Image (cartoon, rainbow, N blue to C red):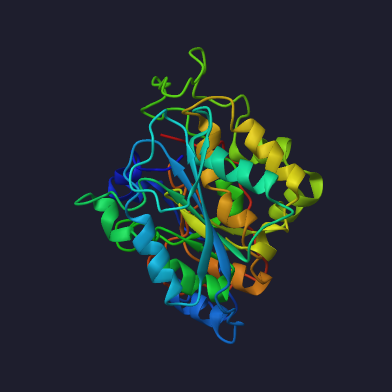
Length: 346
């Protein structure tokens, strides 16, 4: 799932949805997110390009953009050795690269189910890196999302230092600044999307069940992950105070990050995502990919990020704002981000 239908909510009436931070790092100054990220990347090992595969989730969009992306990756030393196209809506892909492997799946779980199924079945034979791409990745045209779009080359370049890269830059959020990829875990794990405007449409393309409902049987993203993942995997996620989130449904990851999660965990997620076509669990999964496929932040870096105010309402629950709230307060010696309020959603 992706936030294509809710992205516009980000910049509208957000002031009431922003929770100020009460905790600042030693010295009392909240550094800009860009400066914190630059420090994190300074001295990071640069991993050269390697063999890669592309996993493309297809429904209705033309895929003629895939071959130019493959050609551009080759200029960086990233050789795409296989392309797997998973078609879910009963339509033959147009513009697929020559030699691409075509897989036909029931129309369940959208792109998130495709990716989890691939990771579960290919866990033992992964290439050095995998690009997970929606067929609509580069079809926004004049839409507002176009300005957040990141090319395959940009993703591959970031992958060399981070182990994960998102196909969409963080959205502009808040009355005076930008959003960031970083989210406060304690707020994000309470995320629900009960009033999603397409909840009434269970599209029947490809045989999605007629009686499926949008709402998840579990009550939040945290409850969903806790019920589906093994204790070691979920426990490691919950130990992090800050999670990265990749919106939009396209990203890339290195093999060593993928293998941090077991094949059984990926299979459990794929099964859960097979409940319906348009489902709340897809929005849970969208917010979980980056955390599952990225190494944890050092604790001191997470604490620096947490001095920024966060969005408290859906669809961007927990997002730490990159350029809002750079103010000086009396230093707080201990981190006190505890949330006892009931989660509010729109």
